Image (cartoon, one colour):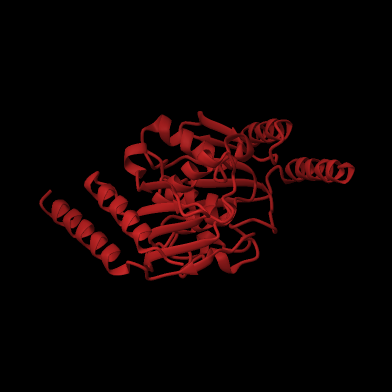
Amino acid sequence: MVFKSHMFQALDEARAAGVRGEVPVGAVVVAPDGRVVAAAGNRTRELCDPSAHAEMLAIRAACAAAGSERLTGHDLYVTLEPCAMCAAVIAAARIARLYYGAADPKSGGVAHGARVFSHPQAHHVPQIYDGIGAEDSAALLRTFFAAARDSAAKG
Amino acid sequence: MVFKSHMFQALDEARAAGVRGEVPVGAVVVAPDGRVVAAAGNRTRELCDPSAHAEMLAIRAACAAAGSERLTGHDLYVTLEPCAMCAAVIAAARIARLYYGAADPKSGGVAHGARVFSHPQAHHVPQIYDGIGAEDSAALLRTFFAAARDSAAKG
């Protein structure tokens, strides 16, 4: 079952990331009982960490809270199609359902490019639901990158 | 140029990981001036973190030390073919050269499965040198998994 409020929370995380000057992507991990156990936005610049994508940070936090490297039965909501790195950690963490917003033809690794879940080397494949909150997510990204281009053009 | 001593150090990290009960994989990041700036072994169990592969930990540590999410001109030595997650973070970190040991048909994401570097969604592709120290690396993994099977069989 899709709870829109979880994607709304992920979109809030994305907005907050944009305000911090990070690419506006947000993610939320939900436990089998419906509790939100982790929420995060992109922090690659702040943390000087190329792996600090929203999904990665949310999964790491949820695993730390659970005391386990696996999140069996947990769902992940993320505003943008995960990249290959995040798709692979979603498989490793045994996330049950992946809900994502906008497609990412340029950097995605689920429906584009590496298509991580379509190979036997992904030892777990979540159920995937795409396009949820996609318009809001895509609008956030468009506004962010348009502002970045304007800023670059003005030097 | 390949410095065997760097792969020896990665193998030492792999051995130490095995002693800790982790899958024995090790990695080393080398700066353009030849200094080893980070070395790590697998710590997924210890840290309850499915992303805590040797390459990922070494890249994160090197980025933290450099104060940058990019490691332009740096080389990565790892004892096993990186998985899709680690291949993608290697691309994101702009690692210049990837030296790896044993091939990993079961979980690899460089020469197998997702083949992360073979898609335009990988925005950087390192030079890749495989098979370095492969025998030592494969022997470590064989011994580790044989012991794990024995242990499981003995209950």
